[in-house]
Length: 67
Image (cartoon, rainbow, N blue to C red; front, side, top):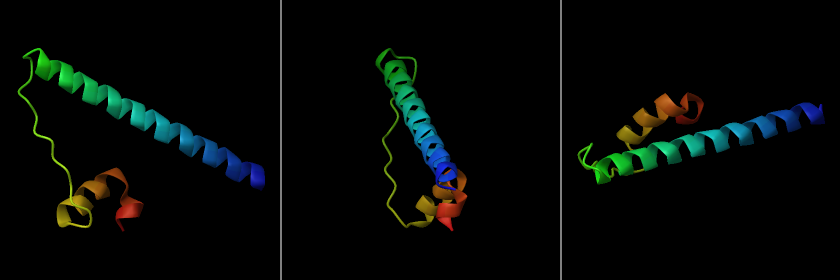
C-alpha cells in the first residue's frame, strides 16, 4: 500500500514540475515577443484570492480545489 502512495506522490511532483516549466517557457516566449515588437505588451494581472474571478479561473485549472 505504501508503495502505491509513493508512486502517486512522485507522479504529482513530476506533473507539478512539468507544469511549472511549461509556464516558465510561455512567460519567456511572451517577454521575447514583446521585447522584439511582435506582441503588444501584456498587462500583468494578479488575481485576488477568493473572489469570483479567482474561483472562475480555479474552476478551469483545478475543479476539485475550486469546490
